[in-house]
Every structure is written in structure tokens, then in C-alpha cells.
Image 1: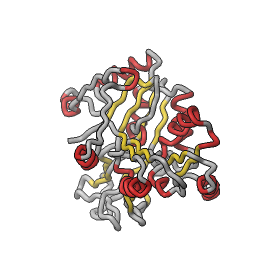
Image 2: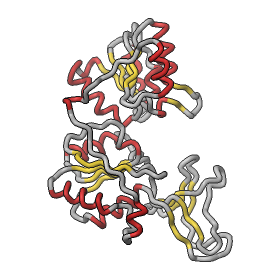
Image 3: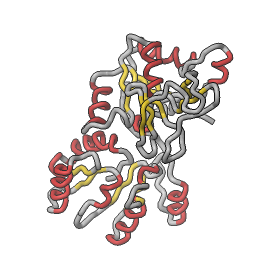
Length: 314
């Protein structure tokens, strides 16, 4: 059973344990320690674990007499590894399924175009005509932030969103705010000469992280001290542009000082079990607002969440 994000494994494991029992399930992903991965690998190899749950690398688990392969959210690009060795878990799953003559189930509400086309040729598409528990589709509103500027609102939160968050707080409901950029500002520029601080390896602008007061490249990991003076013209007229999850969190704390918030992005999940701890804290402690990158919108189940905001740019 493959899921696209490590953060989804705790939720999936809990569901399988409730149905099949803990002793039959093994978990594989890169956030496990070397010892934990070794133990799980040996359990699978000996046949003690009958169900393997994990991220894309779990497709290599030494399962004997495999009976079915299931890939959840099959459209997700996370199943492709861009690190050496490069591989696509879906292609490996298809090969294994053909070799063992077993079913391969690709699950998605928005299937990958190539998967949909290939399966339609073989009449292999099964459609669910109703949502789970016959729930209705959510109401969607699109807010043009250019109109917010015209009325003097320079924050990342529209007037409409502010009202809805306020209503959620009053009704003791939870909110998820999604912004697909981490850090505080996406680039730093000198207003005198236009110089922008770039990564010497990748030639892209560095992102400012306010907590460490450092500039970081989100591609190769290069980082340096923040600049207070332009290296080109010597001006101190340095300005920060763009916005990330750190800046959004700061604005939310200023607007709603009595609300509890928690942030989930690559910067906050560096420690072991960080994914699980943050999600459990949001759910169990009824944190008012969860702020994060794409890992917060990957099929989590939070019954008390009634408002989700997605930041999009044209």
C-alpha cells in the first residue's frame, strides 16, 4: 500500500491496524531510523508482516507471494524519484503486477492523464459515483487579491477570508491555510540598483528565513548570512519581497492573537516523528489554524476542519 507523502503514513497505518491488527503490518519510509528500517525489512522478508505500507520506496519491499498492489493518490508526482537511483514507483508496480499476475489498483479523484488513457483502453476504470458518506461538495470561492489592494489591504489575508476565519474561531472549528512556499520572503532585492541575492550554484534567488536570519536555496541547500548592505552598490536600502509560510504565520498571529496556530513545512519536520506529532497535535489538541505547504493538503482526515484556504497565482 503506497501513499505519496510520509505524513500520510500514520493515518493509513491507523486505519489498517483497526481492520487487520498491528502484528500484520510493516511500515517503510525514509524517516525511519536505520535500525527501524532493518527490523521492518526483516519482518517482511520472514513473512511475519502481511501488509506493507509506505511511501514510494516501499515498492522495493521483499514481499513473497504478493497478492495486490495499491497506490493511493496515483496522480501525485511524489511517486517519481528525482534522486539517484531515479525511478517511478508506478512503473515498478506495473512490472511487479504483470510478473506476479496480480491486480494493481491506482486510486485517485483526479487521475493522471496517461493512467486514465491506458486504463480506458482496457476497460479498467472503476468509478465511484458518490462521495464518502454521501457528503456534499464544498463551496468554493475565488478571491482576486488585486481587488484587495485597491481597497488598501496589503496583507496575505483577504477581507472575506478574515471574516470566515473569525467565524470559525467563534464556532470552535478548525482552519487549514495552504501556501506552497516556505520561509519568510521568496527573494531579497536592493531597491537602488535592483540586485537580487542568488544561489551561486543554481542561479536562483535565495529565500529569506526570518527565524535563523539566513538566506537559503531550496534546491541545493546552500545558505548564507542575510545581507544588510547591497554587495553591488553598497546601499542599505534592502527590501524583502514575496511571502512564505513563516510570513503567513506571523500575519495570522497578529490578526488573531487569541488563536492557536501550528506550522507544517520542511523547516518544522526535520526531527523524527515530526509529521505525526504535528498532525496529532492539530487534531487532538484542537489547534485553531494549521499553516503549511503541500504536505497539509494530501488527503488528511480532520473532522473539525470546515475552512481551507489555498493560495494560487496565475
